[in-house]
Length: 227
Image (tube, rainbow, N blue to C red; front, side, top):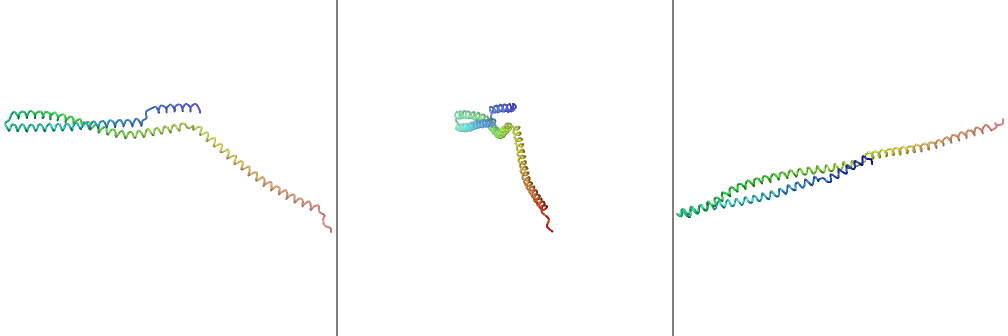
């Protein structure tokens, strides 16, 4: 391994170590959504409690108004019976209930405004949570894609392309050499076979010539027939 390859491996190892120590985007996003949902739960509980208080104030306001109306009717009855002192006492009691009803009315208006604001904030938080979930899924998908791309790049970076290329070149030369040797052997075998047949043909020619020569010599040595 060359010096540059060793340096690159050290750099990649350092980067991987930093990434492993960094915060996991997927975990951070999941935790953020969980925190928002917990806040929403607390807000819903607060809204439910505020509504319950509002309902209780409404009942108290209605009861105070009812009592004030009842004591007003009693004051009318006492005055009709000629008992002004009793009518005065009834009106005094009626004023007490009416003051309570007036205070309850003001308090009820404040509670109604508070509940409305809390409901609006709750709906706003619900919308943010829905948006956060959508973005969370998108960011998690992007983070996973980035991690996969990083791993792929690391795998490609770890491959010694020059060494692989050299290996293929060596194998190509080896194959070409083997093919050339096979072709040479084939040509040699073919040449040897042709030489054998040529030798046979040459032998036949020589034998034929020898036979012809014998015949010729034998003819010359014979005496001519007597006359």
